[in-house]
Image (cartoon, rainbow, N blue to C red; front, side, top):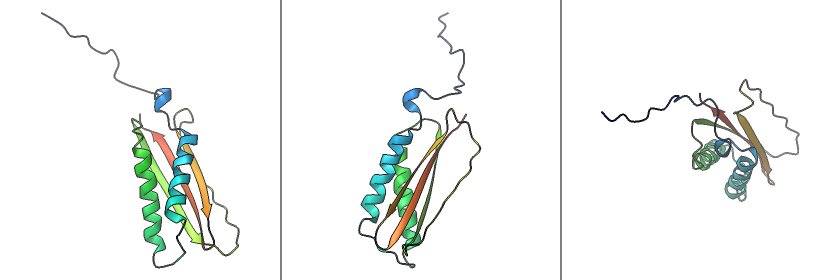
Length: 124
């Protein structure tokens, strides 16, 4: 009888280095999406909700195109009216700092500001 080799372990506890969520690469993707979608946009209370969803979906799709195995991609986008006010945003996460990461980028023009954050959480 011919036996085929059996893998000893199918459990992968850490991604390969090339498959890790890269903060620099992710920030560049977010920056490109924000510039392309918001460059000519103006703040309007009627259309901002749809614009926010469009920006978040585009960022998520571009990050999924990188095909990082076993990563859950979460994208949060906030768009507000630009009136010269200051805005501070904060987030807190409970995760494995060896595998999980995030990237954030801000954009503003004459009528709006936008803060987009993408989280990459490795699924064990």
